[in-house]
Image 1: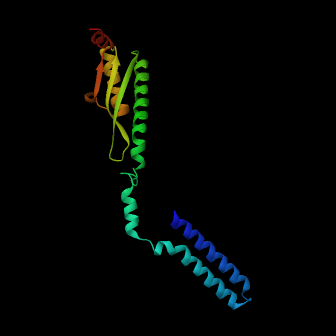
Image 2 (image 1 turned 180 degrees about the horizontal axis):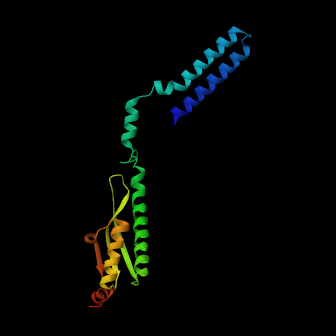
Image 3 (image 1 turned 60 degrees about the horizontal axis):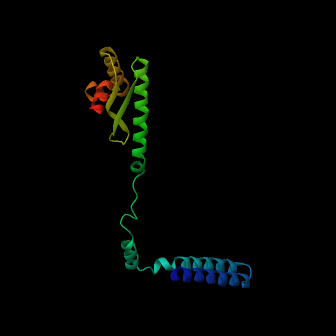
Amino acid sequence: MEVLRTWVLAVTAAALVIAVADALMPQGTVKQVGKLTGGLILVLVLLQPVAGLDYQDLLDWVNALPAGALTQEPLEDRTAVPLEKGIEGELAAYIAEKGAALGCPCTARVDCIPDETGVPIPSWVTVTGDFTPDQKKALQTLIAQDLGVGPEEQQYISEEMTWTQKNN
């Protein structure tokens, strides 16, 4: 903190001296050269802490920081989970809506995995409800066509079976 205080005082003092010198200089070429010289001096005073910086002190300061303080996680890492969960929820609601349209109220769970660009892609679907074989086949086909999740990545659970398992 003392270094910062000293630097601010040096910059302020240099600016005051340059302003006084500028006011005392006669008009013409001398004043223009004086302004140029004063500007260069002010730049040198501003950059003086960088020129005199002890890089070992800087390294020690960085090493003293808590682990991970200087790391930046990519934006994708922070937004991937909420994005993935949002997409999974939307797709589950879509499947439930399509199931209801086919006459079989159901709930769905969609699992996504990110592709090589980080975009969540549906990879597994679990549908819970009571389906006739025709309704199940129609919903399987719809999920395969609309979401790209083949029948082998779809699981259908009967609500009756689930109720029985919970109560035994």
